[in-house]
Length: 461
Image 1 (tube, rainbow, N blue to C red):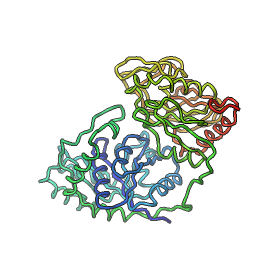
Image 2: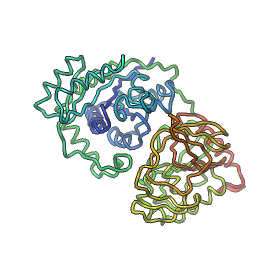
Image 3: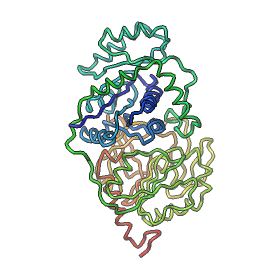
Image 4: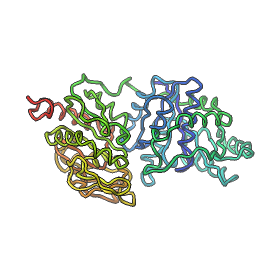
């Protein structure tokens, strides 16, 4: 049994103020000298980037669609064991999962990890109805794990009444957030711009935390976090790190920034040494790499600059044609096309590995969790083997691929997608390696085979 002090910050709905309040609490804890770890529930990439700006290290994800209970507990412990407190940010409304199930919901993470919850309630435009919201959320499940509440967008003069309303139900009032018009973040495909795109992001978060230190009780937060049950962990390390065997080049810059910390950890544990490079600025791949990882991001915003880096585009195409094992997800998949449209609809030449054009659309094309069934033996899965993934993209392709069969968890839709071979996975769906350890192992094994191959593009034998 391992003690990890922890809290979950959950909202009654999307847009209740979870991210703003989570950032202010993370900053407030850091300012008070605590070593903090953080997590985002669900598959989101952007909110963890904001967390990282505050806590100074990478934030993680906890996802009950991708992971079984033991894996979730292991990820929580592995990424929190050297910290004083762990803060989790929920996704959507507290009980919102796939369809009307608990799977993928914030509640499911709280229930699996036995984490006390502070509910964030948007109080704008309501008063006595707050009681109905609190009563409903706290009693909807036999054990809701809700121990406290923060009222968002609540006028100062109403807090005493709101506090009494909560405490009469046995829920601690942690504080409130007044209307703060100066704290607004731009919208983009995933709801937020990335943290690096806001020039004064750290200063803005610091000012916000200072402002809310007068209205949020951090002693109560720490008390609730200390109420968390010890984690039932049988091993200190759920994954055993192998000796480094191969080298993988990982794209990482402004255009390619959507990658799970845990995916990188799984690769390292499986024996990979990672070398990061920028498709925007680097003219060549890192020396003598045995694998290539092209993650998602916003390549369409940098299409012109990416297309001008012709030496790297040519080298990547040559390497893939020579059989370098490559995982290219969403933005990375877009980058491999013959041409890609930018956000204005202008087409630019890209790597030319995938035939046709990747183009802008007016609507969200795919969204949410999916199951992928391999239709042949490939880099990511065996023939007829099922793996989990998720999608979120406005861009579409003239050549989405037909090597995997995708189906929604409720069976409502299905389609073919992904270009796959024994050395390639290229498609819109994002993979989460902790959902199936065989994904990283298969990738590493293929990289080892390529390392000794006479077709190694930089190391012929």
